[in-house]
Image (cartoon, rainbow, N blue to C red):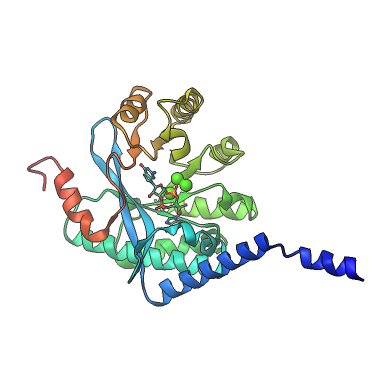
Length: 283
Ligand code: C2E
Ligand code: CA
Ligand code: CA
Ligand code: CA
């Protein structure tokens, strides 16, 4: 009948079709970027707020488009959710990061610790931790030089036990674990007890208007106290101003990352960045 027919048709509203189309084209773009070897890590510095020293970098995915230039991962969000493509992107990033680290070690460049972001797709592989550790070993890179940043989505979509196993294997192998986007998900507090977490990353959303929003200031202070009482270090992301730096230092935040210290940069720019950051005589 007509009514039923219309009902069926309405299941695919224009909005849904748009969404599906966006998703499909994001996947296509990602597949092409992988096939054409255009995926590359950019590196954003992390700084010890007390000493002002560089402690390492976070590797963030970028891809280069011949006409459009360097592209951000936003449109790739769908690709990370796709089980197959998510794993492929993770593997591409890992291979590039490991080869950059190897090159920097050969140059005696004190880059600190490099963190990669793990997706849910990565965590769905039972051998993820083992594969990471094997890659490091094959490249002769000490596992303590690598960090893995995970968000709570890693725990939510799969059974908690397998995520826990992976994290324990990474941690036992000497890889540092950071809980990313802290405060934006739920059940964060129990995760901190349940999993081997070395670092809490306060989400940019709370840091960005720290100075004007008393609610966010209160959240940041609470996370810092929580870290102190659990013996977990805290890093603030999205630090953009000197005012934020002094607030964070005043309240005992150990580490910071954000445009104030440096934007994500190509691997080639990391070398001069580190050299300019180092106190003279140390290079
Ligand atoms: P994230 O892990 O929370 O990364 C932090 C994001 O904040 C990055 O965006 C970074 O460029 C941006 N950011 C850092 N400092 C500032 C600042 O001071 N101000 C502002 N406005 N932004 C700042 P990006 O590079 O666009 O990455 C977005 C998200 O994409 C990441 O969020 C992460 O969830 C995901 N992503 C990026 N690379 C990878 C990857 O290799 N693997 C996986 N699984 N996810 C990735
Ligand atoms: Ca991250
Ligand atoms: Ca984050
Ligand atoms: Ca984020």
